Image 1 (cartoon, rainbow, N blue to C red):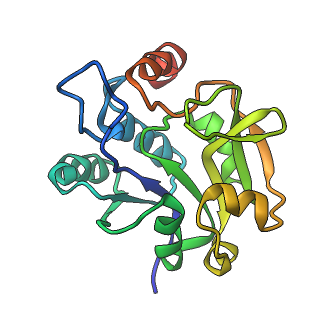
Image 2 (tube, one colour):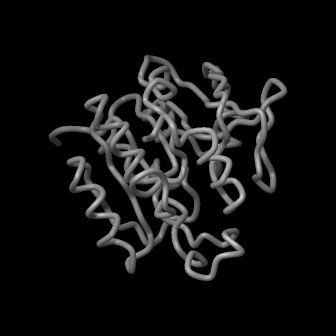
Amino acid sequence: MGAKYDVLIAAGGFGSRSTGSNDRQGMPKCLWPFASGTLLSSLLVELAERNLSVLVSTNRPQFTSTIQRACDATESSLVFDPGFRTTIDLARMHHQLLRPEFVFLYGHTWMPVETLAPFCEGGEAIGTFATSSRRDPLAIGGRFAEPPFRVNSDHLSQSHASSWREYWTRTRRSPRLIKIGGPSEANTLRELRAYERSWANSAA
């Protein structure tokens, strides 16, 4: 089947919570400006520095060329996936292209390479954060679970879980819980400002 990917990035969505800026409404959050590029391009640079092979998926055809340029700059691969319902469906759809254990990330979840490093080690793992802006966050150990995730590809393919919540809590998984000191995913423009305050020096 050829080379398999270390990392899967979901880089789609409609930015439905990015209120307050007309030019960004409807734009995938991964393309929000960050550091000297975008959240996605900055993330891809971090992963390239660790020599990780990356598969990026998007469901937004009108932004494909912009995302493709970010992928080309880091020798990452891009696929167009118009039909998936949830990101766990997306990961399951591509499990044959992924390594036996792979890292799952959102394209709008940037963090420095040293923070990502523990997710490149063996064994399933979940990132945990002090806060979350999700409508229904997954609480684990007094914190909130969000990507990065390190996932066992075979376990995922055999699982019937319909969400990451169900995968981590109802399938007898025992992942490592990795505390991340910075902000969780940037779902709103206010959170993007928090990203810039917390991570911009690392991304410069």
